[in-house]
Length: 245
Image 1 (spheres, one colour):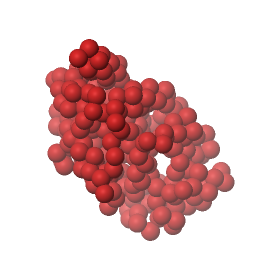
Image 2 (image 1 turned 180 degrees about the vertical axis):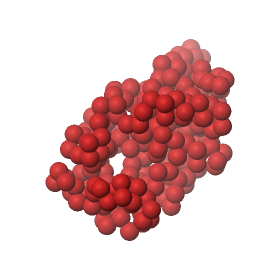
Image 3 (image 1 turned 135 degrees about the vertical axis):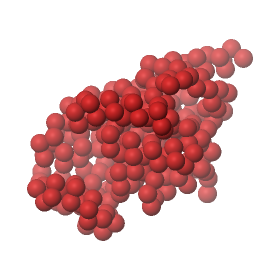
Image 4 (image 1 turned 90 degrees about the vertical axis):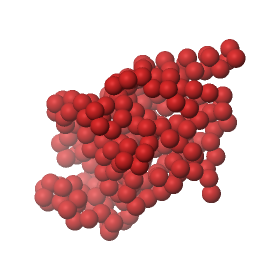
C-alpha cells in the first residue's frame, strides 16, 4: 500500500537549487530527505563507536544542521526518512566478512554483540544503540527504515517506500559520508534517482581527505552536491513563490 505524502507537499510547484556541478530544477512533490545513521551507537558517548575509541565529535557536529534541514523539509511537506542500522538479534543476516570488518578482525564487539557499556546489543533493531539520538528524534510523520548493510537499498523496503511515495529526487544527510551515506547514494543513483548530497549536513570519523574524495566523486559520477544554505534558500524561495501566486 502506498504511504501517504504530507499535505503540504502539494503547495510547492518547483524546487530550484544552486548546486555543483550545475543548478537543479525539479518537482518538489517527488522529493525526499534521507538521513543516515544518526544513532546512539555512533554518536552517543556510551555508544559502540565511542566505546571503541572513535571520536564522535565530527559526527555530533552535524546534529544542528540536520535538525534545521529536516525541519525545513517538513515545513515544505517533503518526507523525511530516517535510514538506520537495525540488525536482527545475533545479526544472522549480516555476512561474516562484514562482521569481521565491524569487529576489526575480532578486536572489538560488532553487529549484534552485547554492548560493552551495558546498553543492550550493538545496532539491534529496537535496542538502545540502534535508536536515533534523542536530539533528532523522528517526528510522527517521518518514516524510519532499517538496514543491515552499508547501503540502505539491500534486502529491505526502502526502494518500495520511495517508489510508492512517487519520489524521484533524494537529498542525503547523516553519517558517515564515506560509508553508509555514500553507499546508499551510489545505489540510489544506479536505480535512477536524482541524488543531492548536502555536504555540510554530513560527517565522518575518517580523515578529511576522504570527505574531499567523496565531494569530488559525487558530482562527477553520481549526482550533485549542495550546501545546507542553498537547500534552505531554495525551500524559502519556492514557498515564497507559491505564496505570491
